[in-house]
Length: 177
Image (cartoon, rainbow, N blue to C red; front, side, top):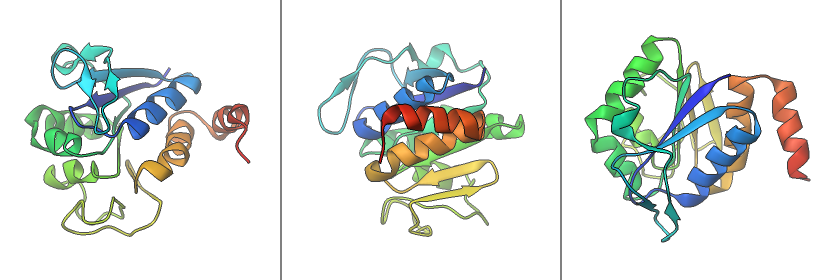
C-alpha cells in the first residue's frame, strides 16, 4: 500500500487539505496528515483539522509521496520549515514523488525543485509564474492551480500511486458528471 504524507500548517487551505486526504484514503492509500506542530491546525477559513500526528513524530519514516495543500499563510509556513525541504529531497532521492497545489509550489521553488520543470500554481504564488494550467505532471513533480482543481488533482495522485482502474473506481463512487 502506498504511503503519503500530507503536512498541515496553520492557515492551510481546508478545501484542498480535506479533499486530498479524503480522496487518497478512498483510493486505499495510507495517508498521514501531520501538523507542523502538535495539536489542531486552524485553516485559512477557520476550519479546524486534527492531524493524525505531529510532523516531528514521522520525520524518519519514508513515504511514496508528499502532498502539500496551499492556502496562506499555510504555504508560507511549509516553505519556511527546513524539515519539509529535507523530506521533499529525501522522498525524491528514494524514488518517490512530491505534489503541491495552489500556493504550495512556493515550497518546491524554495527547495530548488522547480528548475527546468513544468509546473502550475495559484497566480503570483511563485516567482517563476508557472504554466497557468489546471495541473502539471513533470516526472516526480505534480502541481495544481488551486481549490477548484483539488478533486481532479487528488484523482490524478491516486492514479500515479496506484493505477487507472482505482482512480476510476473512486471517481465513479463520487457520482461526478
